[in-house]
Image (cartoon, rainbow, N blue to C red; front, top):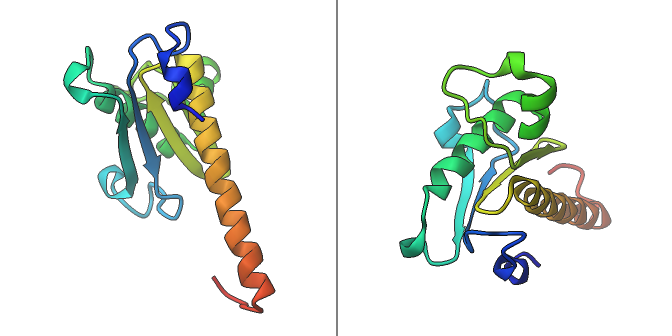
Length: 140
């Protein structure tokens, strides 16, 4: 779904993406940020990167994970919650506790890609929940 759009320079000028997904079971009170990173994934040839998209995505993820908000919302509506050293880039989301950050495209597309990934992860979780209920399992 995302890879075909990466060749469009109006969407993804760099041609690269870096994706960070946080563990939704680990909140800031439960774990250090590094321990809560569930997955990091690069799309495109990392040897051709013109910037550190991994660092950008991790920084965006940190803001959303800590705040429980999309990074754009934090920066535009709650700038008082930013801490020294926080990224001023945006492109991460927090959807029902699922935090996903993307870097490499224009920030509005980073955010859109992150939302698509988060929504798909939520759908997978809902599907597994339905399967468990159908199997009469009463606990996760």
